Amino acid sequence: MTSSANLRIDPALLEHLREDLAEADFRVDAVRERLGALAADALGREQSLPARRAVAGANDSLGVLIGCFGLGLPIPADTLGAALPRTGVTGAIALRIVEPHGAHLVATCDLRPYGDDLGNCWWVASDPTEHARSEPLPVDHVLGIGGASTTLASWTPRTPVARALDLGTGSGVQALHLSGHAETVVATDLSQRALRYAEFNAVLNGVEWDLRPGSFLDPVAGETFDLIVSNPPFVITPRAEGVPLYEYRDGGAAGDGVVAALTKGIGAHLAPGGVAQLLGNWETVAGQDWRERVGQWVEQSGLDVWVVQRDVQDPAEYAELWARDGGHRPGTPEHEALVGAWLDDFADRGVSEIGFGIITLHRPTSERAPFVDLVEATGPVASPMGPAVAAGLAIRDRLAGMSDDEVLDTAWRCAEDVTTETYAQPGATDPNVILLRQGGGLGRVVRLDTLDAALVSVCDGELTARQSLVAISGLLDQPTPEALESGAALVRGLAADGLLLAD
Ligand SMILES: C[S@@+](CC[C@H](N)C(=O)[O-])C[C@H]1O[C@@H](n2cnc3c(N)ncnc32)[C@H](O)[C@@H]1O
Picture (spheres, rainbow, N blue to C red):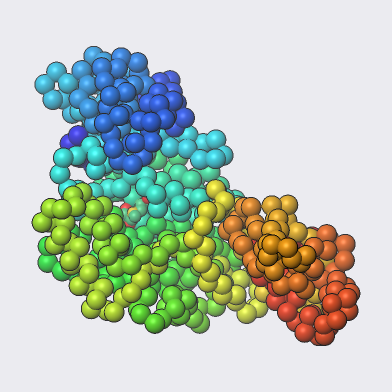
């Protein structure tokens, strides 16, 4: 493939292209079926050989489109013309999605189907992926759909909103999702090439966005939104000579400065009740807890804060990941030099770990004190996570306005996805470990003591927590005031993550 973001935005031709792609069944499930699980899974790992073999010499439209736009294979002009009957070869060349190479046509971009769990099917054009190139990525590379894109899309609540912002839209992946539940979508990017792809994808998919060039929050100065999403250029990159600064992942600051600045600044653009969600990396200096560092970014903001750390890497793991991501192969001198630059950079700041996670901010609609919840959840979580995030924000909002007495005077019930596990020493009659396990949401596992376990076991939505705790503490011969105090804290924690529910 040759790379060009010089795509032409011709609404009539793009409508033809959309119809051709739909008619060829160029959709996520159909592509997987056409390739077969082995080749599709290998392609997901950026190993394209099995997929190339699966579509070698293909004449069916789906196989041709996969080969051309997914794998960068040269396609005979008449074969591509047959796969795109309305657009035609002339139309595809006019849109600049392919270029003639002798008797063949070669794609200038990656173009692939993309869907969500709500049944939407879109097509997304972006720069050719690493596996379709023979050399490292150029620094102005426009990213397609990656793991971070789908993580953010999964975690975003799909509640209907009036105004939504996608900050750093790239080829417009998040904006496509937003189109389904926001009346107005504003999408920004520093990169003009990215904005061109975003415009192409909006027209191709028949949606409208207010696309704006500019850095971070500059293009939306003085404006507020009900939902802001951002998969920002959060990668921590050494500011050292020879280290490429990719636009799609480097925001131009040392360390985790981009995510810190965005987290601090984004709240000013949240309408009352508005939610902002961004992905980020953060550094932990030896001896410090990540919560201290991230917590400082949101102190005094007046916003509710919910941060979930999903992964932790040491400096060497982080360096290997991002040196490899640009297309530099391990073992080459270039790769070694890059890893060295990362290790030096982290050593200069005494960084021992790098966290990755999702930052959710919420502007309360009342004067109540904001909640701050910084948690680790490194195991499997629900997919999509959006419904759990929406429910988590709603219950945290409610709990933040409740006194402990109000929590205790509520009748809670266990969510249906919650189970208990008990473990006992061989021969023992009573368990010495009782675990409460959540099947969905954050997949929380909570260890309970006897009193906690007794309380949870009677949470059926009939008795209030206070009624249960008074009875249980009497039975267990424990002081009731302490039982009420610890019980209220337990209920708050379990309710916040959706293990306990109330009407
Ligand atoms: C990781 S990509 C995310 C793309 C897409 N939103 C997604 O979820 O896959 C980050 C995007 O931020 C853009 N970007 C980089 N620096 C920026 C800045 N200073 N202001 C706004 N956008 C920026 C890049 O061009 C890129 O499109």
